[in-house]
Every structure is written in C-alpha cells, then in structure tokens.
Amino acid sequence: MGSRAQMYKYEFGWVGDNKWRLQIWMCETYAPLLKEYLPGIELDFKDGLKGTCTAILSLTREEEQEVRKLLDVFKNHVLLKKSDNIETYFGDELDHCFALDYNLCEDFITKEVGYTRCGNLEHKAKENQDTEARAQLVEVLANLCEIHPVYRRAVIIIPIPPNPSKTFHLPVELAKELAAKTGKRNGTALIRKVRETPKLQDLPLAEKLTTLRGAIEITGDIEEKSVILLDDLYQSGSTMWTAAKLLKEKGASRVLGLACVKSWRDTDNQ
Image 1 (cartoon, helix red, strand yellow):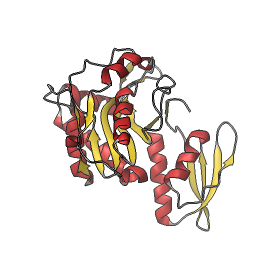
Image 2 (image 1 turned 135 degrees about the horizontal axis):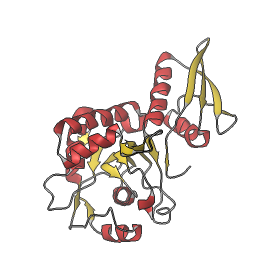
Image 3 (image 1 turned 180 degrees about the vertical axis):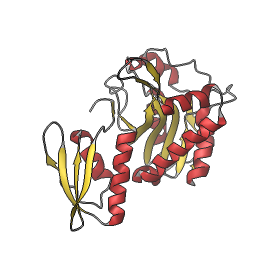
Image 4 (image 1 turned 90 degrees about the vertical axis):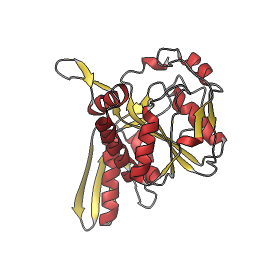
C-alpha cells in the first residue's frame, strides 16, 4: 500500500448456521491486519477480482460484533504508513498508526475544497481553543481506542510535546481528556521538548528531521509499556516517527500512532 489507505467498501453478512461471509476490498492491505488484530478468529481469505478477497467465518455473536467494529475502523478512519520519503530514515518504530480523517476533502461535483467534519473540529479546537470541538474530538478518539483491540490494550497516552514557551497545545489537552475518558494513564509528563523548534510545516523533510534531532526527550519509565502517541495533525509523519523512535529506544513494547487528522495532500512529504 501507499502511505495512507481507507477501506471504501466491505460486505459482511450472515449465511446461516453461525457462519458469516466477509468480502473486503484492498485485500492486500487489510487482510493481514484483520488476522493480526483478531488472532482468535480463523480468517482464511480466498483471493477474488480487483483486489478483493472473501472468507467464510464461524463466529459467536461477540466475535461477529468485534469483526464488524474493526471493519468500521478501517472504513471510517485513515490507516497511515511510512511514505517513501521517510522510509530511509525509520524502521518499525510505529507499530500502527491511524488518523480519524483527512483535514480537507474535495467536493465530488463542485471540486471545491473544504474541511471534513474532523478537520473542522481540529481547526476550531486548535485555532480557537474551542472546548466543545475538543470534546467532540475526544469522543471520536475514545471510540476508536475502545473498538480497536490493539489500541484498547494500550496503557498510556503520550502527546507530541509542545515547545517550552507554548501555553496552549492541543495534543496535551486531548491526551489529558482522552486518558480520563478511556481510563488510560495520561503520559504528558513522560515526554518533553528540551528546546524551541521552528514551525515544521513549511520545511523540507530533511530539514524537519534535522530540526527535531535532539529536541525531544523521554523523561519517564515506559519500559515494556504499550503506548498511544497522540498528535492533532499528521503531515509528513516526521514528528510522530521521531517521537516513536525515542519511545522504542526507551523500551516501549508497542507504539501506536493516533492523529486527529491527516493532511489532505502528501506534497509536504518531500
């Protein structure tokens, strides 16, 4: 797959005698993830046409609900991987990474570009410090953390840290509220920026990575812990992957990226 994917379609229905027929599109991307995330369910996919595959599943009612919820994660949210441009700089520091949605979308008919629902919420929560928008983002983030089996098992939520001079930082506020809502530990105190860095958005990728080198420090014990690394915007991925690398070096057993939105274009990944 490329650096991002979203399952646009699946078919999942009962065929009788506790058996269900599951057909998914983008099979090469999502069949391995279903097998990884649901190891207790036998998923024997048979390849079909145009990137589809099909499996007949014997499921309990609880297993059927688990499969359906995970499929909805794939359909409603954006799966993120390393772009080709950052491939040479990082390994497997991020075990998995999702964004709730893109920040922008193009109208199919008018071709006008505007905010998605989550993009609008992220904009209001960040630029206007809108508490209601932030609460709605937390609700969607918490829902993903609850229904995704791997994110559900994570124990700490760690935000991408702000510059030392910053008085308001959306990822910190989200981490605090998301931890309270999910019962996970708020790991804000476990990471910090040790120096100011300029805004990375308009920098070439190589300069972003140079700027981040030595700027972030892990300050607490995350040995053998499964961590959710939280940011508001995933652009090139340079900040998320840099922080994930530091967490893995400090002994985190698993680092799961989670962003409110992914930038609509990938031109920032140059």
